[in-house]
Every structure is written in C-alpha cells, then in structure tokens.
Length: 210
Image (cartoon, rainbow, N blue to C red; front, side, top):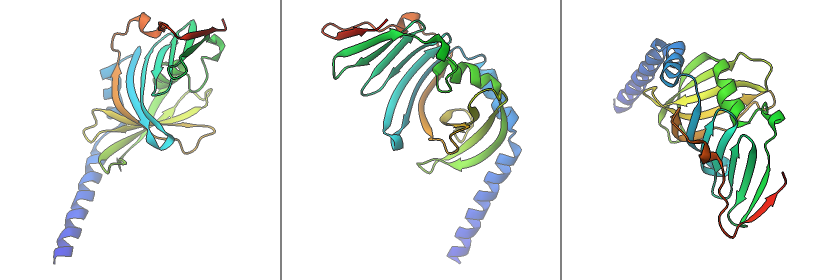
C-alpha cells in the first residue's frame, strides 16, 4: 500500500511538471528575457565549471571589446586597444596590442555576448534537473546566423523562469559542450571604461610587446 502511494505521488509530480512545461511558451520565456534586458551593452558575471577546474571566474564586459577576466591565477584586462595578462604569483604582466581582426573568434567576449545573442531564436523548453538535483528549465536557442561556428546556446533557468543559472555553447566542432554554472549575472549595469585598464602595482615586472 505504501509503495502504491509513493508511485502515485511520483506520477502526479511528473504529470504536473509535464503540464506546467507544456503550458509555458518558449517564445514567451525568451521574449520576457529580451524585454527585461533589452539590447545587451554590458555584462557582469561570476561563473564556474568545477569539472574543468574553473571556480569563480569573474567577468565584466562592455560592447567595444572591453573586458576584464579574473580567476584565482590570472587577470586579463582589455580596453579595446591593449591587453594586459597579469600573473600575481610571478609578479609580472604581459602587455600586447588588441588584435581587432580576431574579434570574430567564436569565444571572444564581444562576439559571444554582443553579436551572437541577438541572432538567437528559441526552439525548445524542457524541464531538467541540475547537478544538485534542483529543478531547472533548459531553453534551447538556435543561431540564425550560419556564418559562425556557434550553432546553438542552451540556457539553464531556475524553476521560476526568472534567472539564468547556467549556459552551454554548441559549436560545429563541439557536440557535447561543458556546462558553465552562473552564480551571478547583471546585464546593462553601468561600468566605467577605466575598469578595463590594468594599473600596474609597484614591484610588478612589465613585459610590453606593443
């Protein structure tokens, strides 16, 4: 009798999830995010991929090839003209010119956030479980621009469909992409341009190749 009750409860939960997902329009979910965030101009995010050994990567980016990436080991700054690669452990920073011809690289910050996302359209919305067994929804987005290596983007949303909690990027060469967990995401927050310029600390060796 007890087993029958448990099975019945599980069945009802599955049926409820199915009906809830069926009544949610993938277009509406996608459009709600588009309307909320509008034209993406800046990104402020903290993401991680423990399986690949990446924990708490801090990223801020601004349209115009301006970005700053901080990890436990390195810091990378780019103001659209120069790039600073800073290694705190070695107390050295490598400075080079920004390669404007490489802005269409599939994993360049500008290309991913500011060029690819406006060309995405929703194809599927499904209920999934996170690594922590929490309920999430996966919104599959197809890239309408076929002149790029990025084919699809999968967004993992919370149970309330209000927050992006993860992302996978599918390319022509990568069929099974690593999932990046998003711990923090702020879009179109005001970011001053000097946030992308590295101020060399005293005692740090500068290797300037410009």
